[in-house]
Length: 117
Image 1 (cartoon, rainbow, N blue to C red):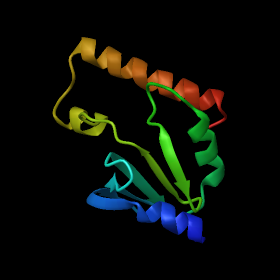
Image 2 (image 1 turned 180 degrees about the vertical axis):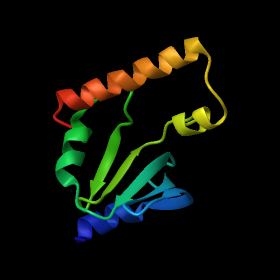
Image 3 (image 1 turned 120 degrees about the horizontal axis):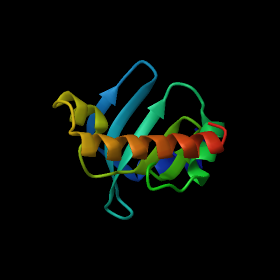
Image 4 (image 1 turned 45 degrees about the vertical axis):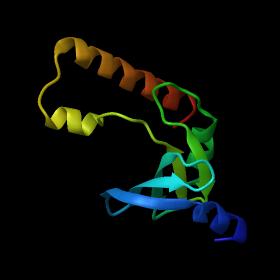
């Protein structure tokens, strides 16, 4: 990691671990520059090419990527609310709510596919 990337990473303090898998560690972080909370995702492999495409996409259904660090780490917007995973664990959503969720997911997938992801 170069000096610039080390500095970028140093401005984020970990608030807590959200999820850890074999290929990714997801943490909630706080920025010392603006005091806002963000999601930091650290991958085992370099994904700079995909991240740079994602960073150019501006969609209401996808979190905005704030920083790409060392090709393996992204810092993205923290979206308040219940995750889809937790919503589904709590039971089946009502039909109206399911339609709204499904429409948002399809819209996000459409944006990704339009951008070659």
